Image 1: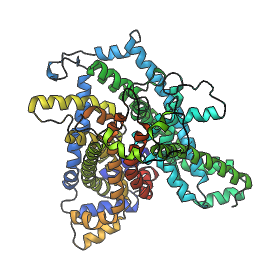
Image 2 (image 1 turned 180 degrees about the vertical axis):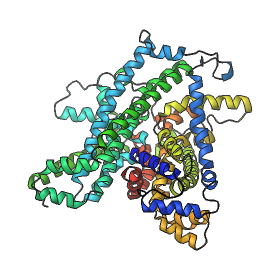
Image 3 (image 1 turned 30 degrees about the vertical axis):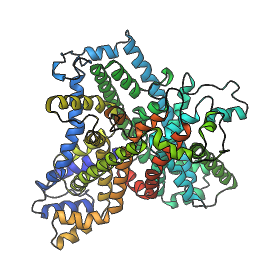
Length: 339
Length: 279
């Protein structure tokens, strides 16, 4: 999608040079803008009229709440003021200071949660991508049962989150769960460990997250693989390239544009994931799996300090924006010399 | 190009392991749903020794599952219809016209879709509470309020996917319609939408699915009367025991329609999800 942002910007820039499209403009675009000029209403008001409902809703559900969130983060929005927000006194940057101050328990716990989330996100995205790639590559050539496997692999993604995660909660039960039963039967878990509290909870949530997420990576990689011309593989094969060489020199380079977007999307989704820990741990995450979304949620609704909760949310957003921008800059720069 | 023996075995091993990873929880879900309560409380067994459909009967009375289902159905349908209806016009504008602010609009839509949900939760909660105090309009814990919050995630996605679908329809069709004297609206409804119908359907199903599966807003913005399935399933665990067989049975029942819809339309999701990135 990032590549699309780039090309959209380029198109918009070209579009500004109204009279004649520059020679680089693809023919389809040129024809479209010529058609636009022919329409009587076309150029000026119609696009805005079409966008109006979307703009109003976007404003209502995204822009205004974000502005309110930013405003809240600068107020002492505690339980006494939630019912009538105009009475909340101005707090300046106090909420941010309290949130980010490592000398306070709040700040230390937030930082802890941040690092847990980073570790969780990196591991989950890497594993999901790897499984998606493996399934995509091995399902590339036709064989009997391929369509069935593809449908099966997509199922975890199609299930409603809570149904999937609550099933895992059951599997991870200490006494009547499947996981401990399997470990028992191969003689690995003599004392039947807890999975949803304590140190194991990180592994548990990682497994659930990967189970839910890897089909999305698979879906995207599979679609991108369909666009790789078979001749490329033939040529590599004739040159004597083995499986891993074809993977490295044909598949991965051709997947690059998709991967650039896929990894960013997976990163943002996983980092913001609320559903998985909330359902898996039944509302209160153990410290070892205290992901940032649930941390903010709990600290906001336990103390009803919405000002501080908003300060945390805004900080989280700024962090994610920064990471995304740096990521896009770095990955785009590395693409350009070859292109 | 022939597959070597090593490659063939690697393929079989990898695909089998992945299939096992996916299947085991699904299998446990189904097999536990047809067990009596006693059998899901002891050691886990793969196959039900006393198969029964009791869980599928009892689950309606242990919690008011019927009401939760109705709430989910109403809220998800409304969210899907509104976001698709709005998204069609927006996507038509973005895919067919060049106008000032087009890039800004696209980037905003794309990025809000990636923002953390928690960022919108606290402000929306505060807005709803204060709106009710100031004007008496009850959005908190109402279905309408829930529909509005669900648009935060379904609207950007619908716009984005539809831009992909409409963008893939050849401009030649528009021009042919114009030559025949059709205006932009007529072109959209008579030419473009019929061609993009599977895509539009896929977007509607996707929007429905996201609302059907949403947990964060539902956990805060609902009460007993407006609770959706997403939160309602937690009702099967009481302080003393968890009706795991009923949890699994209810999970199955609420999953099957949306999962089937998604898998049935999978071809179109592949096209839509990747339209933005591949181009």
